[in-house]
Image (cartoon, rainbow, N blue to C red; front, side, top):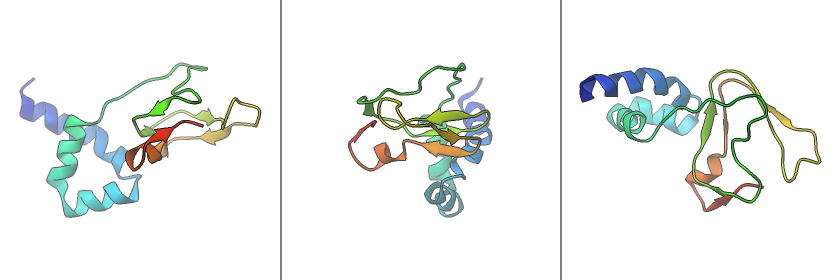
Length: 104
């Protein structure tokens, strides 16, 4: 696939995820070329199986995650509490974009 076509594909796939976040939605309006570059260079997909962990307590956070479909649970700490439901078009682990982050 030519690079320019791959970039357009990434934009079509990833912009709907970014628009969930107020900052990225605003950037898409104000600086679309920047958002297109983010889609092409910084985003990827990850599929999880039922019961699979996305990250572990105490691990260094390095990515923000957007859920596009399905549902999951987010448990703080070692899982003593009832998990918080994370459904479609939600994000998890935003803090790692702005500070040094450790999952808790």
